[in-house]
Length: 396
Length: 144
Image (cartoon, rainbow over all chains, first blue to last red; front, side):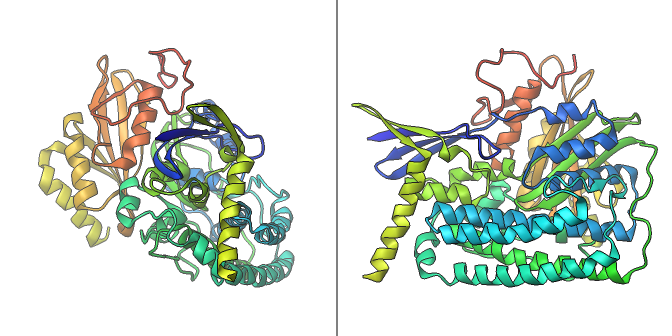
């Protein structure tokens, strides 16, 4: 006997409404369907009516969490159209902003994931340490979020030499806290029991679905735009790509936490170079846009952001295609969720780091006798109860 | 251009010959014009034999038809090959590649509802982005 559980689509707290339909037999999920589009704002169409410069700030509004990823991908695509090389100072500043964003996004995810499995301490730690980054962001850009730092040909603002020692001290503090958090998560036996072997995405499936970012790297699919097609200053500093082979939820969590350490390494190196290099231009004035096409991509916290622009030589693009990483990562649920229990699907969906608004929404389980109501809180409770159960068993 | 990139493009050229019209904008950005009937074969070769990753596809409405561009990334080689094809009006039909490449599933659904291109053989052509009560036969990304 199978039931259908609809989850979604709206929740006011998080930004991306999605609709999941789970077909379950007992506790097992036997089929799954996803529907998106509840938040389709037609940004690609709007971009055609704005100027090239305005579009930089328009695409910043695609996502609230990784708000600098789309601008970086967009300016990369326009710079590909223009065939220009940006000043070295701008390259380092782009890296600093891009990597700070990765750390804050991964910490935000770690906090939410901790909450879903009933580790509210992790939630409070991660979000507390994220504040360090937001303070640095406010100092550098003037904003805690939506930094508006990118512009075609460079960046909007310089990082001042006298501020850098303070930022480096913040990075030291962040590194220490992040290390502590990483060790606490990676060595926890309850988390091993709860997350290992759950929602495995095999390498073959990862390649077939074309998944990106930590979702791909946790399945042994070795891709990272920062290394594969170096832009900004990623080829000028020393860092590693984190790869794990298991493909389960634990691997995805570990990849993200270990990536934070690499990101902090990149930020430190960039800041040190900015301090030692002479002050100079941080953007290149751009006036004419030729006829042609440009492609740009950027490794956002969730994976590659892809932008394609086409120009007819006028003041605005005639086509601007935006592909966010979740568009490729989401369909892989079909490979990783089938056969899992409902309590684990909560985790598997969260492990890809989509915006997880849907599960907190009202949910109905239909059966033959009538309708039984569940809401998102119940789903989180189910997941937390399973962790508690494992914890009890391990004690006994 | 590195040897590896050269070799990749040579392989494509040898396999398909005159069916492909290559244009090199820069060493890492290659645009390839191809007839729509050859699209599935070329993509199958790029994905299965050469290990290219489908980044996405974009559709552009034009006077004579809808131009579809499949962007493939060769990750180890720092190169993006964009496969361009024209689907002529008024019968906007092209063979689906989602049958062997699941990564193309959603983007074909998106192009279908935004531009009205029919992908023959697609496993699941339901709506993805537009609301259920959106009128049939109206495509938001058409220019006329």
